[in-house]
Image 1 (cartoon, one colour):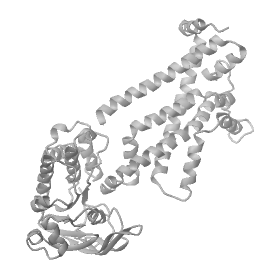
Image 2 (cartoon, rainbow over the protein chains, first blue to last red; image 1 turned 30 degrees about the vertical axis):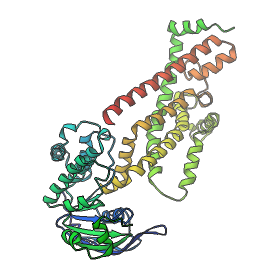
Image 3 (cartoon, rainbow over the protein chains, first blue to last red; image 1 turned 180 degrees about the vertical axis):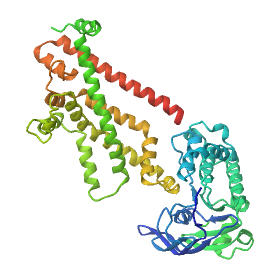
Image 4 (cartoon, rainbow over the protein chains, first blue to last red; image 1 turned 180 degrees about the horizontal axis):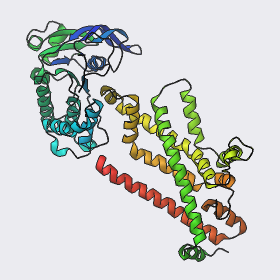
Length: 240
Length: 230
């Protein structure tokens, strides 16, 4: 269907991002390679969303460089992103997923089968003909996941996708994310929920006030946090 | 002086000349709105999604043109289409076509300005998601227009209301020729000045009824499709 060179690894070199005079990210260098899920962890306002938006190429850094697979510009890509509040197009659930397929260049005759397949995977096939905007928050997030996954991404960025969901909906969304990870999609997901980090993370990027404080395996992050901020965060203290 | 029952009798008697007037009015105004839609929707969407020098001035101008005086538009089209005007060779002054053109000019700013605002608001909501899905400029325009279709129906109705109700442009460029370019509004103006108030009032009632019917139909379409698409 597509002949695209890989967008991985994503590399940040001294990347800063400012909104006016307010620094959102401060000189962050990191590398995102294929592998098990990475969770971007930190309090609100620590720069998690900014980091994901830079990864996705939605914003350009104020300083420093972002590169994808060694290239400094992002063409038609195999990245997909899930937002905290998904935008459902004013169409049926099925048409939302078909929209994603169409925009990724899937031939028309394959779209219906792929759409049904994707909706079955997120457990929403029976809601296919319903207007997407009438679904619950959790169901909308699963539609958004189906719409993102049909793009066959190699990197899926998720910005606190369960922040507004109840435990049952969160469990359903996490199950789909784990399934995607097992199928070889690199997951980079922002979260401030320590329980979720324990459930999903293989490794952790810990951000505080726009700085990358720690980048380590999940087990080290929880058992031997090296910075004071990380120790406090893992203990459950309020880190601001 | 005014006998209300004779207005109803006129409507119910099915007078052929009356129906010709009603029919011409509808055809002219609906054609004008159709043309203005084809121009105004993409124009409004384009203006919503592009950034260039002078954009703010253009938006103010477009919003201001929603209030263009019909007689001024009529006069301008009259000058363009008159025998000695730049488009005089086509010989379409005092024809229904001239009326359609003039009304379309009145309606384009209304549809374009309302579309621009609607699309710009929806773009704020859709921007990240569409960018993340690699949707190009053409696709963005098509997606935003389709997804704001319910709001845009209101813009089209505003345009239709303007076209159906105005009398200045069609009077000037149509000439109010009996049996050829006479519309409901020009007839009402003429019959009122002649003192034939029952006919004027009868036509006024028909005009209001038609506008209400078209709005009701549009409302029905909106409710029906909103139930299906959310």
